[in-house]
Image (cartoon, rainbow, N blue to C red; front, side, top):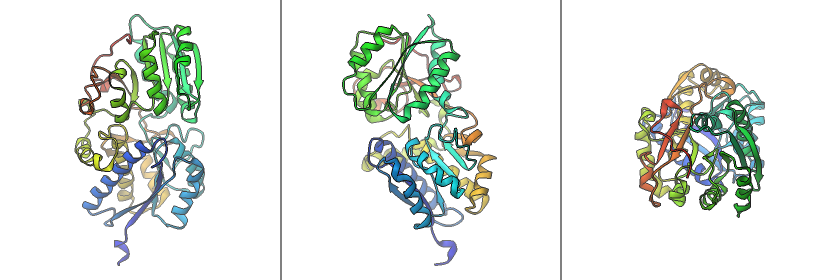
Length: 391
């Protein structure tokens, strides 16, 4: 086989089993659709693309060894980051040592302290990730009448919540809210009633939550059943972006405000995104993944578009050249124009806050067109008005 027809091999790991498997498998399907699309168009540099992908089982301690194998034994041409901080961060020392061009998927603040110039983040949190994820919640609260005055911060005792809580504290101060209660709970918590009882004693106006999948479900159910009613609740919950969580909770989510990265609202219909999602959704049932894909899939597809455009523009796999190109270019993606800035983060943040409104029953179809998740901030992407107060 001629050398120029040898497949281009892209290596990475994903947490295809473990607590974030649903999101990782959604990303996997998006990556496969991209691979099929690019190969149908003639491949990269005229060569077909293959993935070499390993399951890290959500075990951060296995990540470095996987990437060593990919580079030293599998001899992949390119490496990319898997999904989430817990998979990307453990790979970073090796990437730095090898000088690799590395585009990670949804890692929050991975490069804040490392300052590695060849890392790029496919997450729309912008140059100050900690603050951007949470700022919309507090900015929105500050616009309400009567203006809330106090906030309680409640988070899982886990690595993923540390940066968002730092951002929430900074934004509470920025927007003039007094923190009257702050608590963490173990990820193993099953009964959240005592946790919300303690929040209720603070009589907070705002309840900011930084939770994961299972505990997000437990918290929503407990808050809905509890007599205490904060004026606004949500903010930093991982879980409600997932279609399975939305359908499980149904109307219990009404009134909650939470972050999102993309929604099928008119102002976010970037070129190619609906065409891609049509393919993704048609294949999601057979693949056994999130049937809508609104959270993970567009960013995962865009991740590969960035890699492809950098390779085509530079003409090879030289890591330094790829990184230099990525630092100086506006990329066309299904997430719109993406430009990278400080620490490889997006130059401009694009984090949404949505409010769940009008959910009835547990049918998935009501979530397909974005009508049950109203984008309430930032103004450039809003699709409706917030309902205040909660409950």
